[in-house]
Image (cartoon, rainbow, N blue to C red; front, side):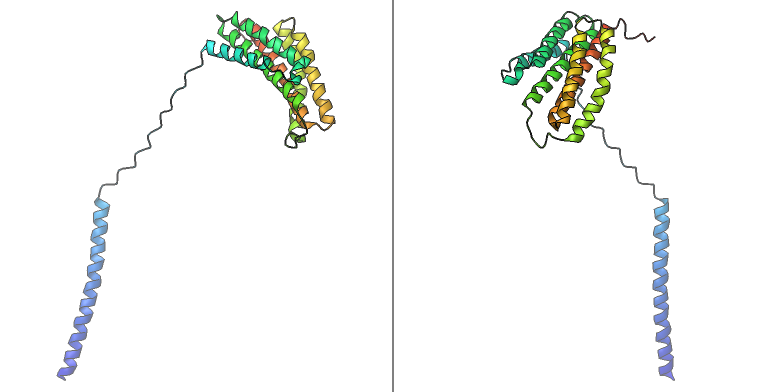
Length: 228
């Protein structure tokens, strides 16, 4: 009998201790949750400090002018047979004239800038003409899609050349309207002969000539702030 009471007592004590332990853990969790709810929120992270980019100084007028002169000297210094091309020489001659015109209009910053842009565009065209003369059968250059894309845009640019030449009032502009058209026709012939690299370069040259005519037209406008 005593042994039975002893077993029951031990069982009750064990169960009580287990229940107490569970209740203690549960109460501890509730206390921690309450303390966490009352704690102040964590401070938000600070935004990253923006990196200060160094401001590049605007190129000076004289630097731009000197750059155009040096480029012209470099192109004139080429003695390869391809440089004897009549179109190449004509484009460099016109570039020199535009640089001289820009020099005499330094007081008008807009006109000065547009004339130098026109001179550089003529040199771009001369550079492409020279490259086209040297162009071979390099497979990397013979991309028909690239040539087709250039010639499609060139076609419409050539049609604008007369308009720009009329606005510029320059007596020599008509000569370069014809040159732009001639370069386009040369590009078309090269494309038909499957010389796609040469076609692309000549198309680029034609487009650059029209770009130069456009900048000359802008330089001749009386006042760019007036739109009629």
